[in-house]
Image 1 (cartoon, rainbow, N blue to C red):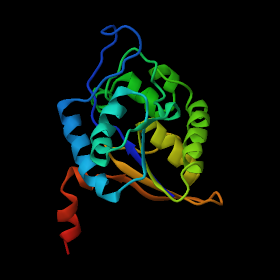
Image 2 (cartoon, rainbow, N blue to C red):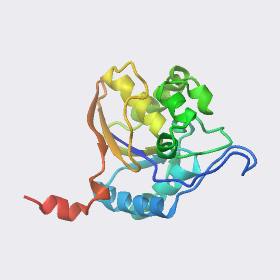
Image 3 (tube, rainbow, N blue to C red):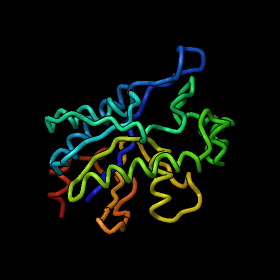
Image 4 (cartoon, helix red, strand yellow):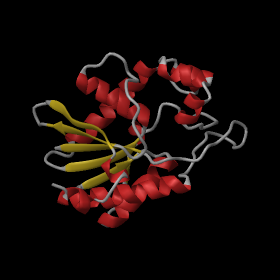
Length: 207
């Protein structure tokens, strides 16, 4: 089967103290445009199932694709982000640009200092959830809209990478894993972003 892992589109910022309970931002105007481009790109591949993290930014990202396919997206709690219970959400690129301590905590694996949980503990939650999806989807193409942390820890497991936060997935980037019934897993692509630069029909027509 082919597992199509997608990072959510650009979300809004949620500052600490501005909401009661966990921050759960929706998409920014640009994020909605990215989600529409993603749907236009992936719908022709006719995935047999689409899944999403329960967080709002992922659900809003998958919505145009699910609508284009005429299906309901399945919510999978196990592919939620490591900081899902945090009371704030600051896009990682803003933390990086500001040289915020939370940026350094994130890239150094101190996720509990950035409103999350230990990355090894997080990986132990994510991998079984993804593998369960694979087990129930033999011979299918399944799209899962999830988060940067999930992509990092799962692909690190498949590739045998020790560092758990090892690449920066772009918004709505696509990474593909090929999974066989005998347990073999191979990474076909990482961080595809062609849909953000052009149309599929134009791309396929290029020499």
